Image (cartoon, rainbow, N blue to C red):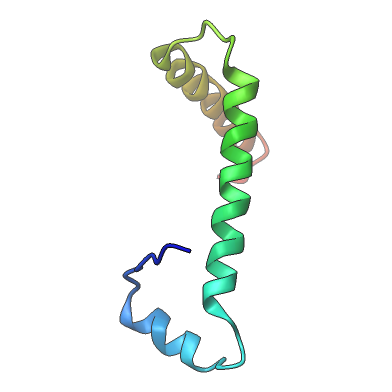
Amino acid sequence: MVNLTLAIPDDMKKEMDKFPEMNWSEIARASIKKRLELLKKFREFTKDSEMTMEDAIRLGREVNKGRFEKLKKQGLI
């Protein structure tokens, strides 16, 4: 097994120290594994896509604009 060193903020470390029963290495491993699985699924889902990064950014902005306008109409912002 390979070792991986992480840098975390001091305040996070202090919070972690309040739970000495936790195996933080295992929690980090599980989190990384879950993210890798998600990335693999995303890559498989998009492998045949012809959408460019610019297309994706434009589409994302349009979606966000629609959400903003909907929230505004509802008086939430």
